[in-house]
Image 1 (spheres, rainbow, N blue to C red):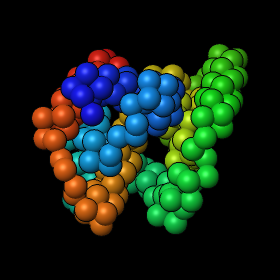
Image 2: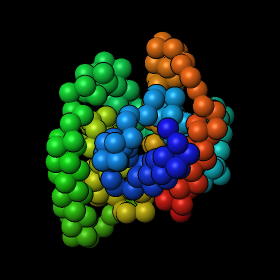
Image 3: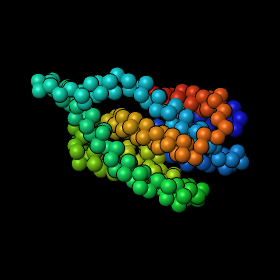
Image 4: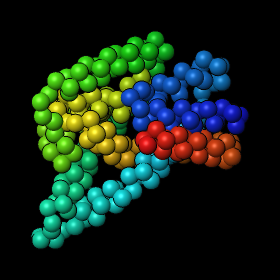
Length: 241
């Protein structure tokens, strides 16, 4: 892999991770289109951690509040801390469906649904569904905010998020779609989707690290890896902003 390829793929990962288009599909399409060959798992790990750093840095104050609230076991706490604690628990539980599906079926999904035709169809299909969700949201007289997300809403969004393991399905796009159908306002949907991405991206990266050590480290080009990480982080931050 060249530095140019590393830069391009880093930018693509950062931009598409937080936009309602599939980052995994674009990272497969682009190398195939230019005949670059598939990148190795170590590079994939660095791209994912680049976007993880981006979202953590952007929401650092919010995430810190949620972290403190999550571990606050005092009985007398403010309404704001109670709300943050509840949101933190919602995010923790949102990991479970995707985590279970990924643990048991990730290899099967990757090997079965990796064709370019299927991913292209998937991109178009979920794009149409997101459009319909947006139309549905605009017709609602009242919408919920981030503080009003119910456990039922959270369970629905979390289950739908598990579908993002299928290549061509955008995690941010599909969670935003589920949020809009749950009658959440657009700002809350976007913010919640980004907050949900933190543990999911971390777990995906950790899983890839385990696969990397299982299959052997091979020849690692640190400069290429860091370049992909850096551009993924910068473009990811810009996409969120």
